Length: 314
Length: 316
Image 1 (cartoon, rainbow over the protein chains, first blue to last red):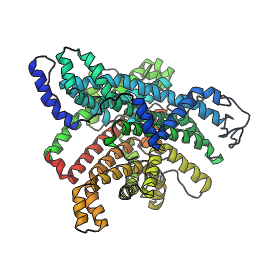
Image 2 (image 1 turned 90 degrees about the vertical axis):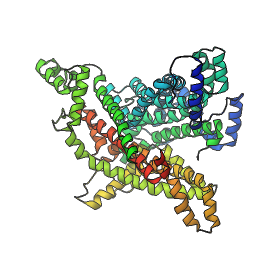
Image 3 (image 1 turned 180 degrees about the vertical axis):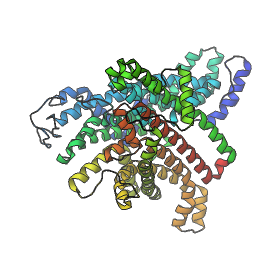
Image 4 (image 1 turned 90 degrees about the horizontal axis):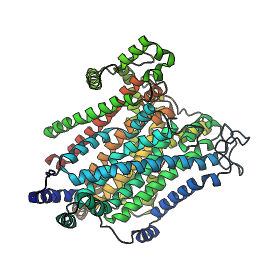
């Protein structure tokens, strides 16, 4: 990694420049921050049906989650008087063995699914972003130490570790959020680190330093705007895996605990009465799939938008 | 090649230390009193019993001492003993390993058979209907959680094809045909998700290679399209494909818990789940450790394979 130590002096910049340029060649080249980014994104979305689909799904899910109690015709744990009823107009997705309306549970369950995914990714970013920026910016031993640590964390299988962590901590929504957040911190840090490495060798950063800008100022004003794009892309992709992890754990009975509505848990519970009707598992599963699809499409779309050169095959 | 291998093996050491450390810490984050947690209040109040449990878990020593004591035991192949049935954890792991391994191997083979040809085909027919179809299918395959696909296979199998047995495991030596036909379904579940990912990698990798000069040269020489694609292009496109296959094999080994639970396969994943339900901490710890190490080794083997295929990697 970089040879720079923490001390100042004239030699430092030369050294850093020498090591920095070689890294810039391997690190991800970044688009500069654009003015009126939002307007351009809307135009990009119009031309790209995949991104549009993703954006629509994510917005619709968010709206459902926010308005859940208004949309759901019944309470999540309300006994509607019919057990294991197949889908009808009165019960769109049928009812489960406890006589609960599955449509209402799916709608209300969106709050729990997004309510785990969003906070866990948010916490991962709040912690991972500064770590990655600092590691890239400070460089040297500090950077190598973090990279080694993250290598180790990457070697651990995520789902298994999540299962183990939740098993040891005990299943609860709070533990679920914490577990997923901890597992994603290294991924966010890695994503934040790579562009920091290339941005810190730009001329305007040197100029800033010459004028005596404090590192915190440089990090905030020069580095942060440049790494916002890749982190945003990663956030969208992480949201899909966070949602999937929550659903997996709830499916196994280690996540959100019944009678709280959760897509994963309802899918898992529906298996017990599967001979009586596939609708028991179909709708919660479709919701998970839609949400994952939405976040993935949005993430891919954002990536194409920010850097058309690395356009991936969608 | 050998030097690289040695260096990579050395890099495994910090990974190993990290993995063991995480495992070691896990048991210490159990909230509340661990003895009460495991044995109930009566046992926890019995001083003699309490001391024995703590001693067996190694919790009566200092932290550092505990870690090295535990590490020493692992090094000797002693993964501890189950709290529930007193059996050796390592014996449990070796008992549960064959179904998991078989499932991983079979699903990987199926995923490659699905993903690589479709990906190549999709790249060659870029922009056509078949390409669009393959990409949409890949996207659906990636987005559909494998536990959802698995549940659907079990549910629809049970409802519409009651004669087909999708659940359970039969040892190969006992009945090879039953073994393979039952293993087919959980393997297919995994193969759909991973095949979709391999398809995407294969497609973009082949697309990239098809733009190279030597492909144009091969075309100019009048070689058959089949030869160009499968000999010239695929050989060079193989490297990113192998890398992705390796990473997803590692993921597979770590992610069998849900599929084994759905298809009632007595493998490592179910061993962990069962142990979690009865709070059998030594079994959880040992199995998680074993799987983590298997993942680390898989990643190493992938790198070796890439090196074997790609002479450029040897220059490093």
